[in-house]
Amino acid sequence: MNLRARNNLIGWSFIVIAVIMICLFYFYPMIQALILSFQSGTGTNLTFVGFGNYQRLFSDTTFLTTLGNTFLFLIIQVPIMILLAIFISVLLNDKNLKLKGFFRTAIFLPAVTSLVAYSVIFKYLFGPEGLVNLFLLKLNFISDPIQWLSDPLWAKVTIIIAITWRWTGYNMIFYLSALQNIDNSIYEAARIDGASSFRQFTNITIPLLKPIILFTSITSTIGTLQLFDEVMNITKGGPGNSTMTMSQYIYNLSFRYTPDFGYAATVSYAIVILIVIFSVLQFKLAGDKK
Image 1 (cartoon, rainbow, N blue to C red):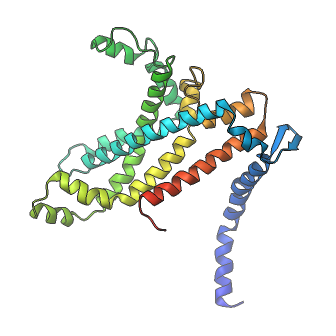
Image 2: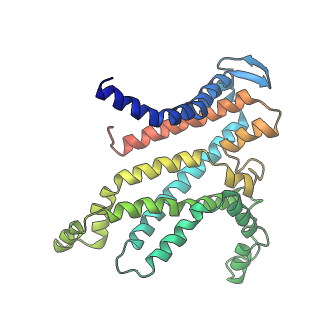
Image 3: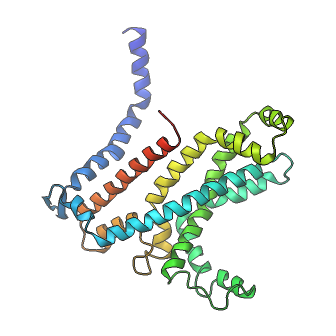
């Protein structure tokens, strides 16, 4: 065996187990789910229906409602979260700021908090007699408690606040890391040329953060399209179906309604298709030709 073949064999020996595990627990379920999306029925009593499940999506009012809810969370929450993360990271990157470590840790902590735990806490905070209503009443901002969880509009607002609180710090870490890799001499040259802080932010910081903004936008879009835990634990998709997301609908199709695993797999692949479409659009809008 020559040296090149031996090196290849050694290399594959290190990764072969990981490759097998990825194929077994990642790609195999994906292929099985795709096959299942062309079938209908429960248990082992499955029948092939072709594209019938995909045609059913367009006439399924519940699916269309969950699609609209998910899009609403996407177009409102993701831009707010990205802008907040950039703004906070710029503030925390200031060399003159004291207790930077404390503030960075405090803002990042929600990202490592248990999804179920923080969802339950938010449910109590935004209850009719929760701390949020008590605080607003004390300040005389409202005269009657807001029905955060039983009003369709305010329920959506609650979900948006919850996921923004959790994931802003997570995205902030990426921006903070990128900001610390920008050479200070670039800002010094801009200041010598008379550029204001706002001009430096728009003409230097934002362009240099473009790859990170693209990355966080795509990952945040994927996360929002797969949103489940917060909705399930805070509002359970209610009131009515006003906050139900596509991921929760998949859960309901599989475990709460009469089980229809074929149609549930179809809805899951609808999410996959949407993720691909939005990812491509974001690459195009960012001008990335790769």
